[in-house]
Length: 254
Image (cartoon, rainbow, N blue to C red; front, top):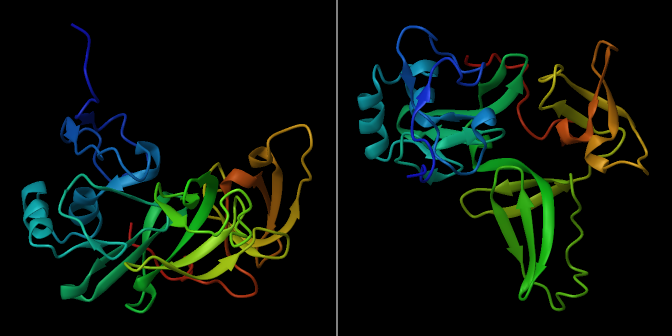
């Protein structure tokens, strides 16, 4: 009989390289459940609590903490220890007065401490949008989506968001409070490739005609004048003249 469903186990050796785990200490590690982020771009909550933050010594202790509803992701209580958290997700532990945002760095994904005020907002990137019978559905980089009701779905004049636009959204209300275009002159951070974690001003975006826009070359210049080249798919705008969120200038938890 053929295999049915997904594999529920994951060995430590093939786990994503940025996971802070011992590769040969034990054979198995918690595998993130299918959800908002792909395996290569996320961390399971149990690993965050045990191996990164150190609030739990074992996976069992992590499950007990989650079962008590003490950990929130993007303003919502999460009780599954294999829940995947990824880029720009906000992890809150109100009882301990600790809040973190997952950001890219040269090591992969890391937790950046933020204030309680910042924990109620999150930046999401528009990946796609589609017209449905009662409005326009916008898909974000974290696997979530938002339905915007319009008067005429065939001509949605109310929706001005385009692919790669950045929206500042409040949680758990999920209200858009600010939008940002990905364009030259804006501040951005690189989320993939060999220059992951580098941030600076977008100085050039290639004009595409014969290839997909996601593959357009983008040049970023940091505060020291160094330039880095990547593709538009790895660009995440974070502000115009000032970043909308705390950057990695604050020491990250790794």
